[in-house]
Image 1: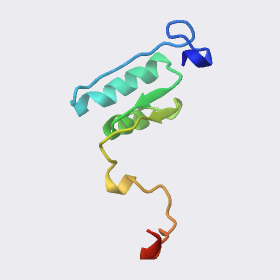
Image 2: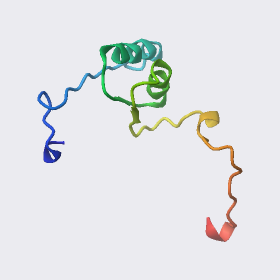
Image 3: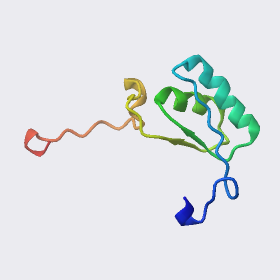
Image 4: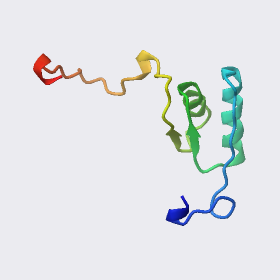
Length: 90
């Protein structure tokens, strides 16, 4: 960030929240961030991302890499049929 001219405490402020595996805390933490007027929410794992999505439609949300895959029903965003490749091209 510094190479791009951003300095923590001067041009941006981090407001971290941790649930320590207590998923029931995530919706309130996300709502608290939304109420505080943050410009962006960075969330991960999937449960935190989902809580952030449910708490705001105003604040952009960035998903961080996570080892927890999203639930199967949430993994497809398109209703278009999946393309099937021949075995030789997989």
